[in-house]
Length: 432
Image 1 (cartoon, rainbow, N blue to C red):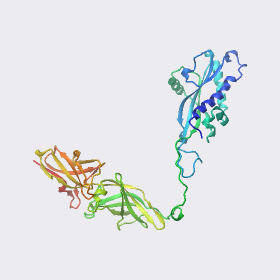
Image 2 (tube, rainbow, N blue to C red):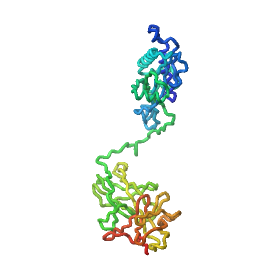
Image 3 (cartoon, rainbow, N blue to C red):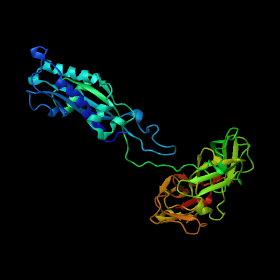
Image 4 (tube, rainbow, N blue to C red):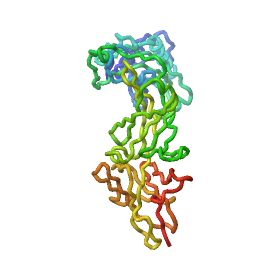
């Protein structure tokens, strides 16, 4: 496995290979194409390569690094034991530019040097492990499982223009290469699991249950058991019946499990007897039950079915969400005159309001924010909360009040009435 020195190891290995350019025999070449002066192999930025025009130089410059997409977020095979979580390696590809600078700007000499350098890299499509070890053994790049390959990069005219414009240097004849992949090991500690002593209860291993598993498809409806059958609601309230639709509900004992995003409590509700293969029901507790006002805050709940079968551990279905709306039981004052505005209006609400919930009050189509300190939740788990707002600018008439908690509005409609009507207890009357 290689380490962070691998980038430098690749550069040193390529430089060692290109040293052959300086030792090659050019004596048989024509005089105008034969390099006469010293040939240096450098690893400098292109704008810093040429202080002496009388020398020949072959420059190797690392101008770009990129992640190797095929190795992202993966670990090397056979590195860890089963159950261990190992940090992924850092996979890199390196982009190099090989550029020649000939003595006295002799382009023929430059072409001879570039051709020799390209032939050397062509003859080394894979960097040998011995070559890497000789260049920089501390990098441990020679020990990685993947070979380090040399791949020519075809440059279009646009690529060449972009590269040399970025260097802010005069264009020189050059060739590009991609070197990879480098698999650099993370220094983060691995998490190792303890050996498994037993495969479940009584060392029986996994349980296999024949037959299709139950699953949830939708939260079908909410209704008040005391209301007419046609009075379905857009959101649930405490005491309502929730209907779930799905599949394969027959032949298994199931209970409903509910969780709220702002509460740590997990609620379990038994299913009602009225059920079939595609529909099940459960009842939410009434607000009159002990501690329900505190333990069942308004908001969005996730519901899943816990399935139990003989000789098998329990498992759960997929999750669905539904909204539990707050309820407003009283307004104080229930009526006021136009001239008395602004005035304080207090709503009595159940269940209790949590400290982190977003709260507002709607009167008709107007929305009002609570007054500073206007949300009061008593320590008594059975007591309601109160929300106080300052009312101003309302015209005379009846204004239906709604309490909005985390985007869910209370339901001001009396569904037990035929036909349904707005609840007078949730209506503020402004008189002339």
